[in-house]
Length: 537
Image (cartoon, rainbow, N blue to C red; front, side, top):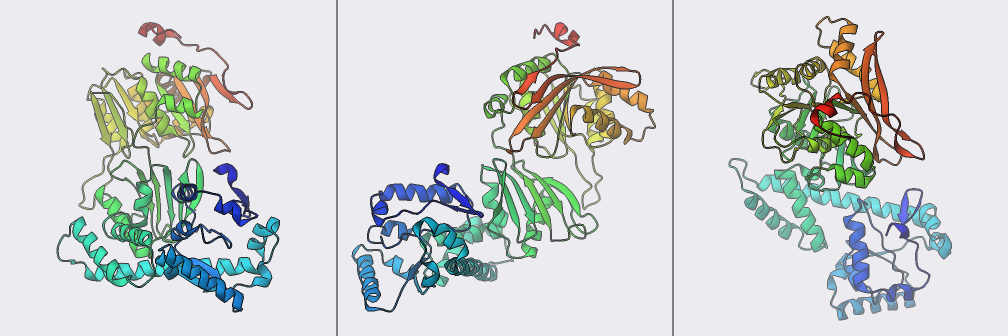
């Protein structure tokens, strides 16, 4: 279908037909499938169908429309055609079409454009201005109906007792039936209103639909009226919004409360997670100036495997096989990249290569990793101080505790600060083969980041000692990045070779090269762990 769609000035359109016969010759099932594909797999605020004068064979199409606008004139011919249309609607038993039909008198002098210039006319002519004004009114009417119904719903609900989901739905159904009986609102609209009203009371309001959408990877709420969604790396604006700022604040408190976190003016920034494992970041006033900011990163229900990453072109089969052997041989690996580069996803995929009989401890700020097939698995999650005065538990605390649990490997979801020192100590005290992630712009930059984060531990260590710790504890650096087409790629794999002359020396093993992709550049220098494990490259 994408090949049919053309774009001019942010308007996506399918070129209009030249004759009504082109429409009449298309089966209703094909029309239904096309429109459903557009509605289900896009987030367009409005879908406009211009069927011209071919109405006699398109009642099923008209029945899918929320509103039908009929251009009319007052001359005898036009009056006769209107009467003919109304009779056909009754004959074909589509009376609901008439309740949704609005007769309008558009600026015909501005709408008479040649077929080849139709889209330009819709964009720039007086007719285009007229259509846009109609759409603005439609949006306002929809929002007003929802606000009115929600206000009435909140007045009807018994606030003095806990209502079941079924009781709330029954109240909503009664409200919709009694209020919208003569409104001309379609059955599909009523079903959608029912769902949205329920979400606004019981779940995450307008966000619930996005939370349940498996194609959504990120949700960005910039205040109550501005919501952006990422699908397949493409960022688009979500047409729906919260009724007001208070409702958005209620949703935020609902999310952080379930994680025993606090967010208010004295603590305006907080990280949390949803029940499905999605990562949540919240920023409120006085830090956030344009309203509460809510960012949700949603992870796939089924973890992405290395085979899937190969299929997506994120990594080559050769490099994946190489990393598999390093993991099995207990090389310690740190994965770096920018925000949204896929570090956590890649870490989860890489952990598949860990032998299933080992004892693994995962340590995260927010539990996101979903390791499969490891029976002896311990999952630890950091915790901020609670509203009841309970002290927080940091990543550093968890790493120190993990060392007393006899782990074979420790996996740190993300290293951000002084915990880097504790991770390096773990790597240098018999916990080889551990994995972790950190933000960095390259493999070389990762070394500088590890140095800075280690010094944040405030142990007053000389830089040379820190570098020796990094060189002896970390074996492999992996760097991920996002390309211009929004895809995620493995860009570099480097070996930490040695500490000499006050510097840590690294050597690229695989590098991304324009036009060639990910290619091997140098052989692995240190093969002692491979030999001990009996693994051959």
